[in-house]
Image (tube, rainbow, N blue to C red):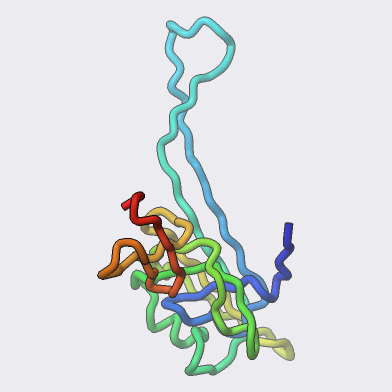
Length: 163
């Protein structure tokens, strides 16, 4: 089992990394509601799933970086739906997106900037999921059904008897 260092796991919004991030968090929550009745004969409460939700948060140092999602561009997009990916990163400033781990659609709901005297200015951004957060799936397209190539160049070869 391979481990992933924190600096190599980043949040990407519309395929662009969040700039100067110091920490990112993913929270998945399942809410339940008690559904017990007088007919129940044991001592255990019956629970029913009511809602599944997820949230992504990142915080970092305030920068002005037009090539990445900096606080200014995030503030401009508050309230908008965006594609979010939690993905492996590499390259210069760990900004090149590698293999995604999870992906989904979310709304940028909150951007906070804190500027304390004689300290680095920091920001926090919160995104609330709009749909299921999924393992990213790539659409398979091909004029040849025996040889499928995904939009991210993964190849699937099938025997002609299997098609």
